[in-house]
Amino acid sequence: MYTIAPFKFIGIAVRTSNSSGKAAEDLGALWGRFFEEQIGTKISGKVSEDIYAIYTDYESDYTGKYTCMIGYQVDTLEKLGVGLVSKEFAGGKHIKFVAKGKMPEAVVTTWQEIWAKDSELDRKYTADFEVYGSKCQQGENSEVDIFIAVK
Image (cartoon, rainbow, N blue to C red; front, side):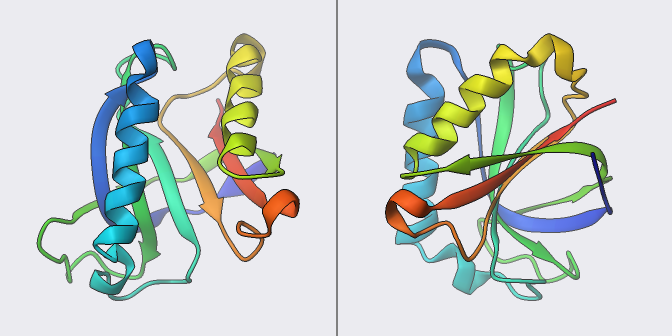
């Protein structure tokens, strides 16, 4: 169990759901936009170079609509660039999973494992997030941390 401190975030976002392959399409497009538009260069006050993919504003559980945001933790929300969104997250108790292997397949597989354990995890559905740090682009040896908010 990890206790995540409250944090501020700036990035881009999309509203989607896991039904009918919609998330795969929407999230693929969001990641494409993140890299094509070099969103990282438009965000000032970054706490680190780790990229965050945050899942929040859940309609219900993982079967309902939610918002995905991709961007960075920042030290202030006052320098919001055009076309970007900001949000403060309360932090709290999280369980950490590590997606290991070729990306993005390893992340998808890990999420499927999380969904399969949904009832036993006692999820809060407030803010779950992936952290793309220094190990995220190492081919078959890549790692991405996934933090799930729990009660």
